[in-house]
Length: 155
Image (tube, rainbow, N blue to C red; front, side, top):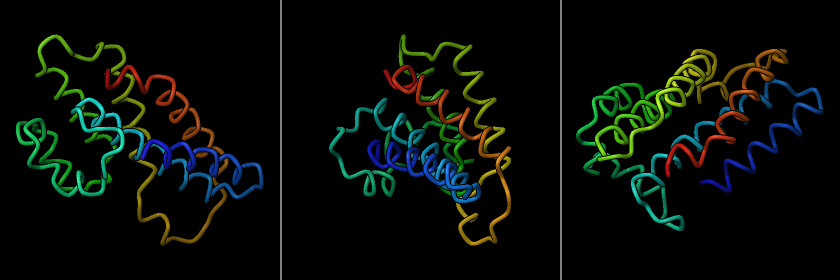
C-alpha cells in the first residue's frame, strides 16, 4: 500500500499538470487515505510485505483496534474515514507505553485531515468532474505534509 500511495501521488501530479484537476484531487485523496492506513499498520507491527487487504478485513480483531473509541466511529462511516484513521493511530500510540505522538504533530495531523475529510470522499469517482485547482492545491499541501511526517507517525 505504501507503493500504491506513492504511485497515486505521482499520478495525481500528472493529472494536475494536464489540467485534470478533478482526477488529481481524487487520486491525491487516494494517496492520503492509503498513507494514513499504512502508518497505522506500520505502528501496529504488521509486516511491510503483508497483504493489507486481509488486514483491513480483520482490523477489528487487532487489540489496538478493539480498544479504540475512534475505531467505532471509523466503522460507522466506513474504512475510508481518514480522520478516524488518524484518531485511531493517535489513540493507539497514546495507549502504547512511551510512544505517544508529539502533541504538535498530532494536532496538525487532525487539523489537516479534518479539512481534507470535509472535501474528499471515495465516492467522488461517481460524480461529474468540476474545476478543482484550488482544492487540489490544498490536497497537495496536506499530502506533502503527511509524506514529510510519515515516519514520525508510525515509529
